[in-house]
Image 1 (cartoon, rainbow, N blue to C red):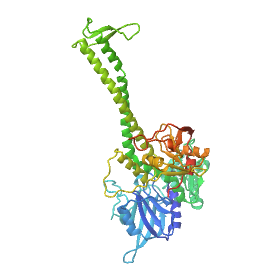
Image 2: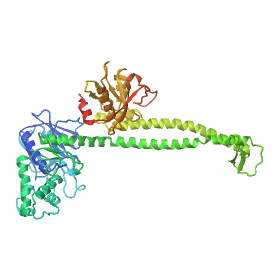
Image 3: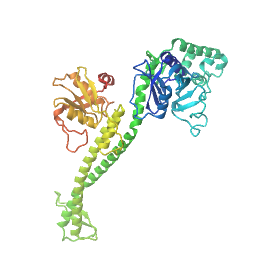
Image 4: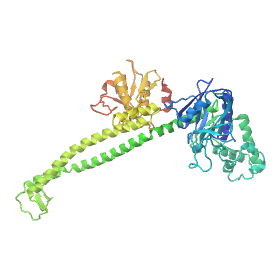
Amino acid sequence: MAYDGFLVNRLAKELHDLLAGRRIDKVFQPERDEIQLSIRGIKKERLLISINGTFPRIHMTTYSKPNPAQPPMFCMLLRKLLGGAQIESIEQVGFDRIIRINCIRKTELYDHEKLSLIIEMMGKHSNCILIDDENRILEVLKRVSSAMSSVRQLLPNLTYTLPPNKKESPFALTTPDAFQGIRTDSLSRSYFQLVSGTSYDIADEFEWRATNDHAQTPEEFLGVHLALLQELTDSAAPLLYNPDAERKQKRTISALALTHRSAEPLSFPSFSLLIDEFFYSQDKAQRTHQKTSDLTKLLSQKVHGLEKKIEKLHAEQDNAKKRDIYQKYGELLMTNLYSKQESRDSIVVVDYYTEDQSTLEIPLNDQWNLQRNAQYYFKRYQKLKAAMIHTAEQMEIATREKNYLESVLTALESVETEDDIEGIRFELQETGILRKRHTKKQKKIRHIPLRYKTSDGFIVLVGKNNYQNEEITFKKADRMDWWFHITAYPGSHVILVTNGEEIPDRSMEEAAMIAAYHSKARESSLVSIDYTRKKHIKKPPHSKPGMVIYHEYYSMHITPDLEKIQSLREKEK
């Protein structure tokens, strides 16, 4: 991933050309580490500022997120100081991954005040700082005290200083002397350590070009370096390079043509679109994982505990299967009550239950007579017989509970929005797995199932959790609609709405593919899918949400195609 100084340089120019002279309209903070600015005159896009430790970035975005009911303090301060402020310029600082947004606002006394929003995009040290024209820090999105860093503190009323950087700006490297330290046996590493804002991709590109040009001297290394800068100035473009498994090259973005990469890049209309496309899905997946990790951990622990319980019940059942031998011991002892015993701790009797009437040695308690020993074996038989019935019931209950929890875990893997997560939390609270939260104002959850439209125009509904599964199956589906579900694995209920029409084979296959994708086996091939009319689906009494039974059904095997499924997805209104 080459979100480096070269890319930031071009991005800053693009943002300056687009936003300079415009006013900040509104400020949002949908995440604790993310700010979004709506700009007057630009309706469909916002300026996104993220200091996420894994995906820090700044760019224009078309994606909006729901905002918290109570805005954080940093957001409220930005609204107060930057709401209505005019953007004067956007610039890169020191050819590093730092962008400075210079603004001017009118005070309550109608004076003009200059403020700057500085975005530092440096991994876990990323931050967003608001300063005045004297470099005094007004507020920091992520405060850094002396206890957290002895090198550089970021707190209100302190003077803002740039992060320490031992590297040189590439535009300052204009003489051969600057490249004296470049080692011919380690060109990429040497260039990376020398030039500020350089990523591993750019360093590898420098080595590739220097090697192809047979560069050996500082003068020749300078020539390769200046050619890179010239290309950055004259012909930089937003490029996306897909991964190459053979060369172990990851998916990356760049402002320069990476000629050392084997594949041809995809070109984008703007750097914002490139960065938005590259980071959105990754960032969304990471944030979803963070928000669901507590639920995933809790449910995984419960599933593990139930697996251990089922394993123990199996062992008890195996032990209970020995009960018949104790009944046999008791009956044989009763038929030999008056026989002579040569030993007090065992007795050898004729086994009347075998065809050859062979002898059998029965262990005895030497403190008891034969009748009491027989009673002991009869009691053990009755106890194990009762245990067999009890363990079978407990195993059925534990298996149902385990299957239900696994279905919730599968639903967690597919969540997309905050409402999806809250819907699953609500379900777990209603079923008693989570303790209910007692808050004054309950957040309203939008219970909207996923919608797809097949190539033939038929609607497909998909439940996001078990309550939605029940809703679309038993409340929204007509009795003649088709119902799909993965065979013998947790997955979503899928309803293909027929509207009383005959469904083409293509639509049936697409609905099955959607059911395979929204299941535990989404990454498998030739997934077995059961399908039947909704009228054949029944809900067992007192069962968990989403649990159903059916006996009349058909099956097909299908392989999920992600691109095909995404093309069928309808956007939520």
